[in-house]
Image (cartoon, rainbow, N blue to C red; front, side):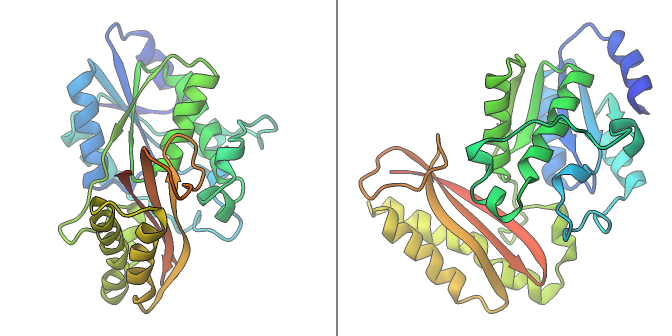
Length: 277
């Protein structure tokens, strides 16, 4: 496995003749990331994993400085997953100066997670565009826990003609149901127990939807579970049309997503569930 920054990446990439799959990460790798790498390994000749904590997607009061960076453990995880090249650029390589030109996430990037974290998705799309340009992958593999991010990357690929196949992997969960996230390590035992209200709420809403209930009842079922969790501060809960991220009208039929965002003990958590109406 090769590891390096931009210069090493370019030399390595120029020597590749087969299909290349990219797994973008910010490090602090867990089983969810390993599943992404395994998916990439199964569909491409070579796999690149990026490890870069991107400052553009963090707000002024967010956890950029304390975001976990266990680089040695991350390299070991990449090696075990069969990654061929780990792209780990220095901050000054990716941004020699503050970028004046950035990718705009548009309306879809200004709602829900984008409303809670202004500018977040502009920062995400900007760094993903840079990764696409530097690595020139044929495929990119993303997790669907960050479903709004996935949909925005999908839209960017289409709108800017990147010509990359985007692969989404379903949410990977721990045995207790909590969606895997690098930020889960911030939670103590009591906070983690509180956070379990999030997957429980999604399960309750899905059960109600399977009975033929409409959007208002589905949201109400999830909200009831979340409201009973002491120590959980709900940011947003909404059933949206999967294609547009617009709230579902009462008579909507088709593919939807139930989005949940909450803070537990100062840790920001997100999750979602696909629901067919």
